[in-house]
Length: 334
Image (cartoon, rainbow, N blue to C red; front, side, top):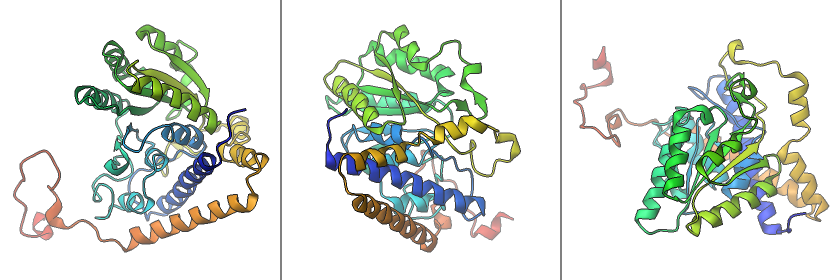
């Protein structure tokens, strides 16, 4: 059994519950049209997200993917600006211009989430290269899915990181499906981690439902990267409970039957809650954490609802292009 650290365990639990509560509420609001656009949730994957993120320092970098809210929350991001971003409000982390799939929160080292499958991996390699060139000991954690492991960016990124011995950890969130496609039908190897040997880097498989085990494995990879020994590929076997995204319709729904029920019996939050009680953390204290999280999520929703939308004149702020002339008023667009 892993070494017990009460403060760490409480924080692991708090962050997992924050992800679940935030996303459950966001999904409810999106399903009734209050939150616009696409919304991809990570319920069921909280163990690998939080275990990995808490192995980092606050100033370390993190890059995510289209299933995007859990990663910054796992890294310690505030809920108010995250929820406001989902609403497209000016107080959001990207001033309302990123939305659910394009979050970034530099205050916790989150360099960005992106809707393009596999596109975060070269960004992570670039961040790690930047650390090397600046002689900084910051490391980069890169989340990607099993589908991204079949993209060219996966192989290019691992190759560059390996030959330059860059301080980056590639963490594959293997939840069994790329949208609706079972991973077993599109891979000729049993495990994504098996591909690490092609680049002569460590490749490990970890139970993504065990938050403490993920934390320990990623912490070892972080220490290795920070010491100059180069990258590691870690594959977390996990599962997402919901369909690919909210409101996508029957074409993106899967009848997973007993498979879903089996994974729900290994819910990472429920497993860890029981483990905390077994380790003599009072259930009353655990309940207090849960109540605090629910209150924080409700507060974030009210903050988002009451925040203003971006001003019309801000349309071309914070973009890498010359400002185009705007019509005199929004109505002038016709």
